[in-house]
Structure formats: structure tokens, C-alpha cells
Length: 367
Ligand SMILES: [Zn+2]
Image (cartoon, rainbow, N blue to C red; front, side):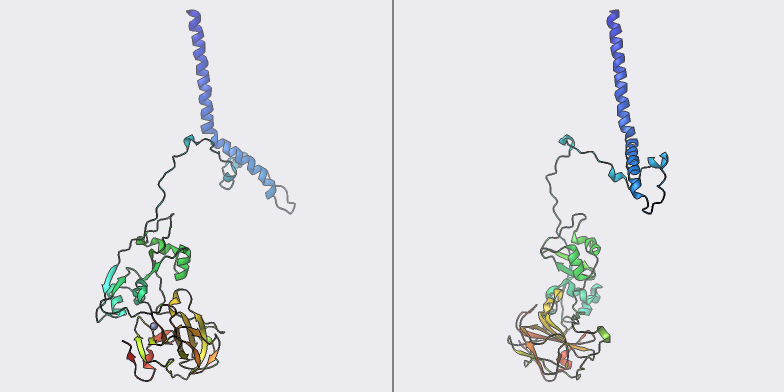
């Protein structure tokens, strides 16, 4: 018994010693990790130092003191190898639920147009700009006469425009299209864009705060020489305007929503320069101005421009001087147009004028 007790005591003594060693090892692993890392950094740092020495044979950088070596540095911590997990036993269970992007969920007010409404009166009523009425209702932009009594208008809560997402578009491309910050689009609550999963859903509509679709500010690119207002024009218009087409039947009159007149004309009818000037644009209207379709703009050199839109043919080129009555193109149905007609504008320093105030003779509605 005595002997067995001795051996048992001896064995338990070994156990205590072994347990102590294990504890010490464990503690060393836990507590000593930082020291190990610091030591690793120190050695790496020391190894790198020579390559940082100046190239002009200056004396070698003095060795760092131990204190300096031991200070962990953010710039070198990336060089410490991270442990690689080869065992999947601790890996999280894969989540079978994939992320599903939320659809935009707007809840806009609707305004029903009455007899006495104007773009400005509607805008004033809701505290937005007239531009934003177009922004929320792209279907009435430029080439429609849908601002009729009883028409329903979407009223956006802030100034901006609705954009229908097309496949392949990104937030960056949409922001660039309207010249607004990406963050403003993300921040608008009912766009339902949730960082970091900023997924765009084709055919959904985003509200673009601060955007203008350019209804009242369209400037045809000045594709002839010179710069802006200081340009010296080779010719100056007469200041009088003739009818650019032979028709006098109008499908749409000038208004705050429609900066010109629409003259119904059979496809391919001749179009004439309303006054003398320099052609500044003669191409399909690009980007968000596609409504105009094939467009000719003539700058008359006196602050006035004339626009000829939806053309089927263009017979002039940018920079060309044209004289009042010259044949410049043919009527058509390009861009946002619901039948062959000429959309004609007269602008004074970028502001639309009512062409009927400057064109002679009676007109009639087509209906
Ligand atoms: Zn028009």
C-alpha cells in the first residue's frame, strides 16, 4: 500500500508538472503572440532598412534601438503572414439566402391638369421648378401635347428627374448623364439603393435629385469654330423669319412645355432656312436630347437661333453659311415624334420664343 501510494503521489506530481507546462505553453501562445509579431516585424524591418538607405553613399542608417524595433508599425504589419485555414471544421455554414435587391418604391403625388394650369402654376403649387414637372413626366417632354385638361402628372417631391434604368447602365454612368453626384442618387430614400449592394434593376425608375432633362435649357453643341458669346459670326441674320415649310397646319403650339411649334408635313417635304446664319449643328441629337431626332440648328449671329427637328434628311453641314430661304433638309419623323412633322423653334439667347410672333400669316390647328 505504501509503495502504491508513493507511486500514485509521484504520478500525480508528474501530472501537475505536465499540466503546468501545458498551461505555460498555452499562456505563452496567447500572451506571447504580440511579442512574436513584434519580433517578426523587427526582423523584417531590419532586413528592409538597407534598401531604404540613401543612394548617395551617405552613412548607413544607424541601427534602431530595441524600443523602436518593438513598436508595432501599421506600415509593416501587412508583411506578417496570416495563418491559412486548411480545416473546414470551424468555417461558417454557407448561407443559402442570396441577396435580393429591393425595387425602388416611390409613392409620388399625382396632379390632374385643369383648364387654368400652366407649368409655372403647377410648379408653384408643389414648391418645385417647372423643369421638375417635365422631370417626373418624360412622356410630355417636348414632343407631345399631353398637358391637356385631365392629364395626370407625377409630382416629384424634390427637384430632379425620373430615370428609367436601361440594361448595362451603372450608377456612375447615370450620374454622369445628368451631371449629379452618385451619392445623391443613393441617398434618395425610395430609390432603395442599399450600400454595399447597389444593384440597378432594368426598367425600374430612379429619382435623380438635382437632374434636369434639359427641356428649357437645351443648347445645341457649337460645332463650328470660336468660343461661346465672343464668337464673331461671318454672317448676321436679317432679323426677319420666313416659314421653314409650306404647311400652316399645327399639331402643337408654343408653350412652357413645348418651346416651338409643330407643323404637320408629309415625310420628305423641303425645309428652308428661316433666316440667314451659320449652321452650328446638323446631326442626330445626342444623348438625353434624342427627342429632337435629326436636328439642324442655325445661329443667326444676332443672339437668335432657329431649330429644325425630326428631319428625315440633312443637306447642310456644321460651319456652313446659309441664306434665308436656302433648302437645308427634309421633314421626317425621327426622335420622339408621333407622325411626320417639323418641330421649329426660334430662340433668343437660349430662351424659346413663340415663332408665331415672328412668322407671317394665319395658321390653323390640324384637327
Ligand atoms: Zn414639337
